[in-house]
Length: 113
Length: 111
Image (cartoon, rainbow over all chains, first blue to last red; front, side):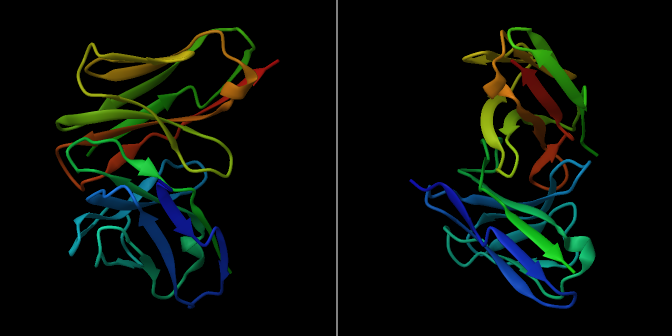
């Protein structure tokens, strides 16, 4: 199993540009989520999904959109990038949302100029 | 609102010098407390899950314990390869359905 994979590893955007961060898992996990990690702060939840077709907002959802059309994929979309979205983004998955362990991907480092 | 506080922020030890990292938490209905290890430029790597007070888990030189208010990650006779940032997170029954993380403890083991 590849586990949780994320692409790209690194991306530079200009303010106002849009892009999609890709996340995929091959463990047949129902629950998937996106976090951002900033210096001096803990990881913060952006959006999550408890199954295909179901998504909800986390702690810091503004400026981000998600969709879940398949169990395997959970892309994160930045509609109009802002410098405040410069961060490292991690995708995670678990077999359920009932206290199950979440497994993280390698991250995408995003720089918005 | 769930809160997780980790201490110390940074810790420097000599190889073989045992110590403990602290994770204090306040949650509305604990569904799980998680310890992760994160190396520079990498994603968090799962170490332990604890569900109830009194529970303990061990893996090599690491041992995690849980009380109703805090968790400890004990490191026995550490080696330089144990150097990393250790993250604590909780999952609760309230609020958004995800993990609430502490800011981490940056651990350096000197040879």
